[in-house]
Length: 198
Image (cartoon, rainbow, N blue to C red; front, side):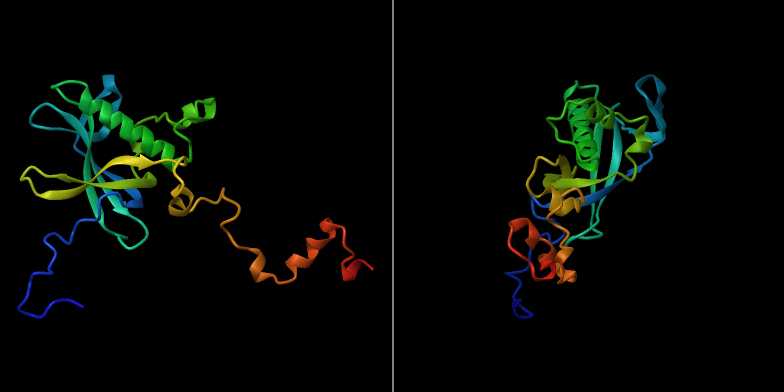
């Protein structure tokens, strides 16, 4: 399938990249940066302060399942930028999405339970979080392409249950085939006389 040993035209330039738009179940590990600001609720040494004064979480997202299992995507989750609120708002939006995804909440759900599920007591609650991510492609400081995660996939997405492996979806676990006698027990509902009832 690949080209001959001396023909490199079909060699991919960066085979490390996961295709843009790939949905994958990932686990977040926060690489501690040792920066705390208790007034902001940034404790436990999880946050990192950059040279420009920006503050972020250094996220390492490990793909858990599928063809890219064990691959890692490194993404900074913005908490504060001296340039303005945009970066911190993007970070907040991503964390909200991650919590929705991990805890199975629709982004539109405004119930008390949903609001409680979007609260964290500290960054430790995010460390180890498993959710469905949308893999994107950005550029690193050298202008090289790299994978990053800018959005989480919530239960509103049609592919969420399959990727997350949620048990809440009844049709997916096919229990009946393992017990061939099951279909007969459902026939009485139709009003016909099953043989065992005569």
